[in-house]
Image 1: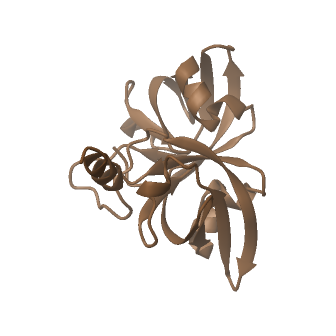
Image 2 (image 1 turned 180 degrees about the vertical axis):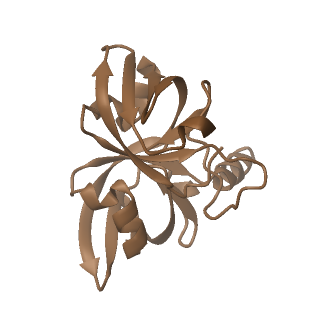
Length: 195
Protein backbone atom coordinates (compact mmCIF):
# COMPACT_ATOMS: atom_id res chain seq x y z
CA UNK A 1 0.00 0.00 0.00
CA UNK A 2 1.16 3.51 -0.85
CA UNK A 3 0.07 7.14 -0.39
CA UNK A 4 0.71 8.57 -3.84
CA UNK A 5 3.28 11.01 -2.45
CA UNK A 6 6.24 10.50 -4.77
CA UNK A 7 9.51 10.45 -2.86
CA UNK A 8 11.97 9.68 -5.66
CA UNK A 9 12.34 9.61 -9.39
CA UNK A 10 14.05 6.69 -11.06
CA UNK A 11 15.19 5.77 -14.54
CA UNK A 12 14.85 2.47 -16.36
CA UNK A 13 18.41 1.29 -17.02
CA UNK A 14 17.62 -1.84 -19.03
CA UNK A 15 14.73 -4.01 -20.17
CA UNK A 16 15.01 -7.74 -20.88
CA UNK A 17 12.41 -10.14 -22.24
CA UNK A 18 9.26 -9.87 -24.33
CA UNK A 19 6.22 -11.74 -22.91
CA UNK A 20 7.54 -11.22 -19.38
CA UNK A 21 10.05 -8.48 -18.61
CA UNK A 22 12.89 -7.84 -16.20
CA UNK A 23 13.76 -4.19 -15.64
CA UNK A 24 16.72 -2.68 -13.85
CA UNK A 25 15.70 0.68 -12.38
CA UNK A 26 18.29 3.24 -11.26
CA UNK A 27 17.20 5.06 -8.12
CA UNK A 28 18.27 7.22 -5.18
CA UNK A 29 16.37 5.14 -2.62
CA UNK A 30 18.11 4.06 0.57
CA UNK A 31 19.60 0.69 -0.45
CA UNK A 32 19.64 -0.49 3.17
CA UNK A 33 15.94 0.24 3.64
CA UNK A 34 14.85 -1.67 0.53
CA UNK A 35 14.76 -5.41 1.17
CA UNK A 36 14.53 -8.15 -1.41
CA UNK A 37 10.83 -8.88 -1.82
CA UNK A 38 9.87 -5.29 -0.99
CA UNK A 39 7.07 -3.59 -2.91
CA UNK A 40 7.83 -0.33 -4.70
CA UNK A 41 5.36 1.64 -6.79
CA UNK A 42 6.83 2.44 -10.22
CA UNK A 43 4.67 5.17 -11.79
CA UNK A 44 1.72 3.63 -10.01
CA UNK A 45 2.54 -0.03 -10.72
CA UNK A 46 3.35 -2.11 -7.62
CA UNK A 47 6.39 -4.25 -8.41
CA UNK A 48 8.53 -6.55 -6.26
CA UNK A 49 12.27 -6.02 -5.84
CA UNK A 50 13.94 -9.31 -6.84
CA UNK A 51 17.58 -8.19 -6.90
CA UNK A 52 19.47 -5.04 -6.03
CA UNK A 53 22.84 -3.39 -6.38
CA UNK A 54 24.00 0.05 -5.19
CA UNK A 55 21.80 2.66 -6.82
CA UNK A 56 19.55 0.21 -8.69
CA UNK A 57 17.04 -2.60 -8.25
CA UNK A 58 15.58 -5.29 -10.48
CA UNK A 59 11.84 -5.92 -10.89
CA UNK A 60 9.87 -8.37 -12.99
CA UNK A 61 6.59 -7.82 -14.82
CA UNK A 62 4.24 -10.46 -16.19
CA UNK A 63 2.40 -10.30 -19.50
CA UNK A 64 -0.74 -9.29 -17.55
CA UNK A 65 1.03 -6.27 -16.04
CA UNK A 66 2.45 -5.29 -19.43
CA UNK A 67 -1.01 -5.46 -21.01
CA UNK A 68 -2.81 -3.42 -18.33
CA UNK A 69 -0.27 -0.65 -17.62
CA UNK A 70 2.15 1.63 -19.45
CA UNK A 71 5.01 -0.62 -18.38
CA UNK A 72 5.01 -2.31 -21.77
CA UNK A 73 6.04 1.05 -23.29
CA UNK A 74 9.06 1.52 -21.01
CA UNK A 75 12.53 1.40 -22.52
CA UNK A 76 16.01 2.22 -21.23
CA UNK A 77 15.92 5.87 -20.23
CA UNK A 78 12.23 6.03 -19.26
CA UNK A 79 11.78 8.17 -16.13
CA UNK A 80 9.52 6.69 -13.44
CA UNK A 81 7.97 7.91 -10.20
CA UNK A 82 9.03 5.82 -7.21
CA UNK A 83 7.42 5.33 -3.82
CA UNK A 84 8.38 2.71 -1.25
CA UNK A 85 5.49 0.94 0.46
CA UNK A 86 3.79 2.53 3.43
CA UNK A 87 4.98 1.59 6.92
CA UNK A 88 2.92 1.78 10.11
CA UNK A 89 3.35 5.25 11.54
CA UNK A 90 4.11 6.92 8.19
CA UNK A 91 2.28 10.13 7.38
CA UNK A 92 -0.71 9.73 5.07
CA UNK A 93 -0.19 12.84 2.96
CA UNK A 94 -2.07 11.67 -0.14
CA UNK A 95 -4.67 8.90 -0.22
CA UNK A 96 -4.54 5.11 -0.10
CA UNK A 97 -2.98 3.90 -3.35
CA UNK A 98 -2.61 0.17 -3.93
CA UNK A 99 -0.44 0.06 -7.04
CA UNK A 100 -3.18 -1.84 -8.90
CA UNK A 101 -3.67 0.12 -12.11
CA UNK A 102 -7.30 0.33 -13.25
CA UNK A 103 -6.71 1.71 -16.73
CA UNK A 104 -4.31 3.42 -19.06
CA UNK A 105 -5.45 6.80 -20.38
CA UNK A 106 -4.08 9.46 -22.67
CA UNK A 107 -3.14 13.00 -21.73
CA UNK A 108 -5.37 15.31 -23.75
CA UNK A 109 -3.97 18.73 -22.92
CA UNK A 110 -1.37 20.45 -20.76
CA UNK A 111 -1.44 24.19 -20.19
CA UNK A 112 0.32 26.60 -17.87
CA UNK A 113 -2.00 28.49 -15.51
CA UNK A 114 0.05 31.00 -13.55
CA UNK A 115 2.83 28.99 -11.89
CA UNK A 116 0.75 25.81 -11.96
CA UNK A 117 -0.25 23.43 -14.75
CA UNK A 118 -3.67 22.21 -15.86
CA UNK A 119 -3.57 18.60 -16.99
CA UNK A 120 -6.48 17.03 -18.90
CA UNK A 121 -6.65 13.23 -18.99
CA UNK A 122 -8.97 10.83 -20.80
CA UNK A 123 -11.56 9.12 -18.59
CA UNK A 124 -12.47 5.53 -19.52
CA UNK A 125 -16.25 5.04 -19.36
CA UNK A 126 -16.05 2.20 -16.81
CA UNK A 127 -14.11 4.42 -14.36
CA UNK A 128 -16.34 7.48 -14.73
CA UNK A 129 -18.75 6.53 -11.87
CA UNK A 130 -15.76 6.32 -9.51
CA UNK A 131 -14.25 9.73 -10.29
CA UNK A 132 -15.63 12.83 -8.58
CA UNK A 133 -14.76 16.52 -8.41
CA UNK A 134 -12.58 17.06 -5.31
CA UNK A 135 -12.04 13.30 -5.13
CA UNK A 136 -8.64 11.61 -5.32
CA UNK A 137 -7.11 9.75 -8.24
CA UNK A 138 -3.61 8.38 -8.81
CA UNK A 139 -2.03 9.34 -12.14
CA UNK A 140 1.27 7.50 -12.69
CA UNK A 141 1.21 6.81 -8.96
CA UNK A 142 0.79 10.48 -7.95
CA UNK A 143 -2.06 11.28 -5.57
CA UNK A 144 -3.98 14.12 -7.21
CA UNK A 145 -7.28 15.94 -6.71
CA UNK A 146 -9.83 16.00 -9.53
CA UNK A 147 -10.89 19.58 -10.39
CA UNK A 148 -13.22 19.08 -13.37
CA UNK A 149 -15.03 16.19 -15.02
CA UNK A 150 -16.58 15.88 -18.49
CA UNK A 151 -18.06 12.79 -20.13
CA UNK A 152 -14.77 11.43 -21.41
CA UNK A 153 -12.07 13.33 -19.50
CA UNK A 154 -11.10 14.94 -16.21
CA UNK A 155 -8.80 17.81 -15.31
CA UNK A 156 -6.25 18.34 -12.56
CA UNK A 157 -4.29 21.37 -11.37
CA UNK A 158 -0.66 20.54 -10.69
CA UNK A 159 1.28 22.77 -8.29
CA UNK A 160 4.91 23.65 -9.16
CA UNK A 161 6.45 21.29 -6.57
CA UNK A 162 4.57 18.25 -7.85
CA UNK A 163 5.26 19.29 -11.45
CA UNK A 164 9.03 19.47 -10.92
CA UNK A 165 9.42 16.49 -8.54
CA UNK A 166 7.55 13.89 -10.61
CA UNK A 167 7.56 12.72 -14.21
CA UNK A 168 4.66 15.06 -15.08
CA UNK A 169 7.10 17.72 -16.31
CA UNK A 170 8.27 15.20 -18.95
CA UNK A 171 4.74 14.56 -20.27
CA UNK A 172 3.13 15.75 -23.52
CA UNK A 173 -0.38 15.51 -24.98
CA UNK A 174 -0.86 12.01 -26.35
CA UNK A 175 1.34 10.36 -23.71
CA UNK A 176 -0.21 7.42 -21.87
CA UNK A 177 -0.50 7.36 -18.07
CA UNK A 178 -1.55 4.79 -15.46
CA UNK A 179 -4.79 5.52 -13.57
CA UNK A 180 -5.94 4.12 -10.25
CA UNK A 181 -9.24 5.31 -8.82
CA UNK A 182 -9.70 5.87 -5.12
CA UNK A 183 -10.35 2.55 -3.36
CA UNK A 184 -13.25 3.98 -1.33
CA UNK A 185 -14.96 5.15 -4.53
CA UNK A 186 -14.48 1.68 -6.02
CA UNK A 187 -16.25 -0.02 -3.09
CA UNK A 188 -19.08 2.51 -3.00
CA UNK A 189 -19.66 2.01 -6.75
CA UNK A 190 -19.59 -1.78 -6.30
CA UNK A 191 -22.07 -1.57 -3.42
CA UNK A 192 -24.47 0.61 -5.42
CA UNK A 193 -24.15 -1.73 -8.41
CA UNK A 194 -25.51 -4.59 -6.30
CA UNK A 195 -28.72 -2.75 -5.41
